[in-house]
Structures are given as C-alpha cells and as structure tokens.
Image (cartoon, rainbow, N blue to C red; front, side, top):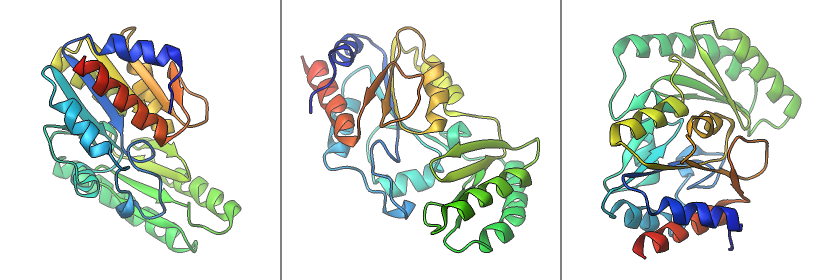
Amino acid sequence: MGLEPGLTRALDDLATRRPLLLASDYDGVLARLVDDPAAAVPESGVPELLARLAAVDGVTVAVVSGRGVADLQQTSGFTGPFRWIGSHGAEFDGPLTGELQAARDELVAALSPLVDAVPGARLEVKPAAVAVHVRTVADPAAGRALLERAAAAGGPHHTAKPGKDVLELAVTDADKGTALTQLARELGARGVLYLGDDVTDEDAFRALDADGVGVKVGAGPTDAAHRVAGLDGVRAVLERLVAALAG
C-alpha cells in the first residue's frame, strides 16, 4: 500500500533524528477492533516490524493504550525493549496507588447496575478507570442512552474519555498527550511519531511539537497532520520507517 507523498517525506526526515520516539496506540492501530478485547491480537507482521524498529540504536518504541499495562502486555504478546503506557497515561512504567484503586472500585459499584440493566452492554474494569462498552448492544438507542447515564454517574473528580461505542471514566486526569510529552522529555527525543485512531489519541496529536509526526488511522476529524485509511496503512508506515532507518 502506498503512502501519500507528504507522509513519506515526513517519515524519511523523522528517520534521520536521534533520539527518536515511535509511539502507537494498540486497539484499532496495531490490532483490529473486535467485540472481545481479549481477542485483539496484533496484525500479521506488526510484532516483527516493531521489534526491528526497537533494535535500532537511538530508537525507542512505545505502546500507548487505554488498557492497563498488564492487560496490554498479555493481549499483545509483544516482547522486546518497549516502553509501556497504559490507562491513558495513568500507568507510566509502573502500578497505581491504592488510593486510586479505591476510587476506581467506587466507580465500579456505581456503574455495574446501569450496565447490568442493558443486554449486551459490558463493564470493563481497568487499573485507573472503568469503561462502559456498548458495541454489542443490539439497540443503538439503548446503547447511547446507557452511555449518557454512565456519564451522569461520574463526578467532577472523574475524567470522561469517550471513544467508539465506549465511555471511559478515569480516576486521574492523565491523558495520552501528557504521557507522550513526559516520555519524549525523558528520552530527549528530537523526533516523535504517534499513530492513533480514537478520540483519546487526539490528546497525543495535539501534544506533538513542530518536529513531531501524527498519523490518524481511519476516518473522522483529527488534529494529526497525516492520515492512513486503515491497518494496512499502519503496516506501510512501519515498513517505510524500517527501510529508512536501515538506509
């Protein structure tokens, strides 16, 4: 699959920079969106491409997700010297505090009855958040109404993170943008790539500086400067970077 010329030039320029940070969302970018999150395996060839990128001197590969880090590592099966950012930035290479876990458990208690009342809805408990999923609700109107009730159940100390057929209520105000900025600063990165497909990835796109390259995967409004149509385009981006870094 060919990439638009502007993106190709941006990737080739990015490959000349060191230290270089290559960061990507997981679901909908490195793995296809599926009804069962546990079944979201990486696209064919993606683990090998990421491993080749991470093996280049001066290059750091980070996987960024709304999932908890433990869930992300288990589901992806990725092995290698990757950096892991989970729970939309709340998990940054380490576990959460007990205080945040207690706040999360209060959310679980508040949302469980609402979700149980809607057939097909599912409650996902994450380390720093609780997510209400309505992708498998047969009646779209019932799904939308549930998300509205879930949003109303959250308080001012919760951060709402809407996505595709899902609403996540987080117990911290961390987001993918603040986490990406923190990691780039820690590495002293002179170039940053971010790949994302969802609403929560817009925080990361907005956090990129003038030397950063944001790539939106799929349709929808975005602050990213570049776009690919789907996961085949993601593979093409990774392949282009592998070739550019090898050259």
